[in-house]
Length: 175
Length: 183
Image: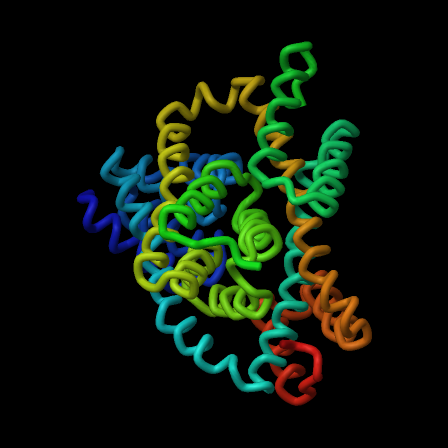
C-alpha cells in the first residue's frame, strides 16, 4: 500500500472522529478488513503503544501507519493525525472575535468551568489504570500537591517520577 | 503579568510538553494550561476556554486542535503551525521507534517502570490543573461555579452526556445566565 493511500485512509478516519480512539472502528474496517495490510494484534499493539508514549492516544494511527508501511507509513499516520487540527484555526479566529461581548465572555467562562469538570472525569480511568500500587498513588499525590502549590514546570515532575520508577527498577522492584 | 512571548519560546513549551507529558491528550492539555495560563501568563483563562471549546468541536485529536488554537491565538499562523508540529513530533518519533522495537519495548522492565511512574505523575498534573482552573472562579463566584461544575461532573462521569454535549450545555447556561464575573 502506498503512503499516499495510507494517508488518505487514515485521514478519513481522523477527520470523522472527535476523540482519540473514536477513529478505531474506521481504521480497522479499512486496514484490517478491507485492505488486509494490518492484523488485529498489530492494531491492539498500536493502541497499547500510544498509551505508553507521550502525547495523545489518537497517536496510535502513527503506529498503525508504521506497521502497515514502515517509516513512510508512520509519517503518513502522523500527517493524518495533525491535518484535522488545522480546522481549529478558522474556528478559534471566529470565537476569539466574538468573546468581547459580555454574553460571549459568560459562555466561555462557563465552558472553562465545565472543561475543568471534564478533565477531572478524564482523570478517573487514567488513575484507575495508572495507580496500581501504593508507590504510584504516592507519586500521583505528591505530584498533585507540588503542582498545585508551586510554579514548578511539569517536565520536572514527570522527570522526577520517571527517575523514581528507574530507581525502583534498579532495586529490583519495578513499578 | 505576561512573560515576553516569541515563536521560539512558544515552540520550546510545546516541544517540552509534547516530549515529556504521558497520559494522553487531557494530561497534556492540563500541563499546557499550567504553563501557558498559570505560570507564564501568555494565555488568559478566557482564551484558554475559547481554545478548549474549539478543540472539542474540531474533528480529529482534541489535543492537537487545542495546540493549534493556542498557537493561533498567541502568534497567528506561525504560532499555530509551530505548536501543531512541535507538540506532535516528539511523540510521533518515539512512537515509531517503539513500534519498530515493539517486542523488546514491552518486555523492558526498566522502561515500563519509568513509564508507569510518569503516568502516575500525569494523574497529578491533571488533578492540579482542575484545581488551578477552578480556584479563581470558586473564589470570585462560588455559587455560579458550582452550578456549572457539579452537573458537568455528574453528567460526564455517569456517561449521561458526551463531553461535547456537556460543553454545549455549559455554553447554553452561560448564554442565558450571564454573570458579572468574567472579565
